[in-house]
Image (cartoon, rainbow, N blue to C red):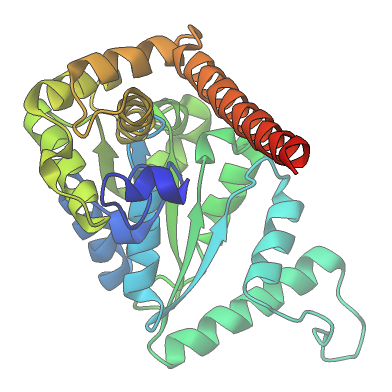
Length: 314
């Protein structure tokens, strides 16, 4: 992999699909969404909703947001949302490192598990509020939350002082989350969502800028992909950042296997065909591997011949 990247002057893989804040590319939509999240935290708004199709950059945006607030807030990130209400609260307490073992009534009668958890959580919130620190819950893939757990979140949002909310709740998910929140079952929760934002695919120009920005950050020239290649990437990806990364990465590999110093439209076409199961790149890898094996075998035979000839000579 290092040889493959180095042949194009790349110091890093610019199109890996794992969310990386260092490669964050702020479109106008991303800037507006990040500003909305910051506003919700600054103003202590109760609920914030962020939606977008898979691969539009929601997780990367969240990482940037959390990095911005790490010195000023306690943030729990829940990434396994298929939890019952009690399991969800347990997950929160674990994420915030809240100890519930000391929560007892004044007469020393131990509270039941649920009440003990809620009392410990409220004490945690009040303590941070007194210090001027925010507390936020972020739920990724929140469209998978059971209705009962969403209702539990609404009840948690009731934890407040006379002047402000003690907790900010950010629900992040695919577009169906928006429809789920808007259902009759969750009407009360929907009324508490004060900030709503969404992410969609990049435009053609944004796709070209996105590709150029990632190449430059990784140490290569933006000219590595020609204009027609960038246009084809946008067409095949629909401007979805994750798909842009997948296609661009395969296109660069195709150019490498073809011995081309520049990624052109034909390499993007190969990448698209490979993504549809044509196996073009895999076959190229196979032939490349066989070629190296044959070359190695030829060298061994040649060396053996030289040695044998030398033995007979003497």
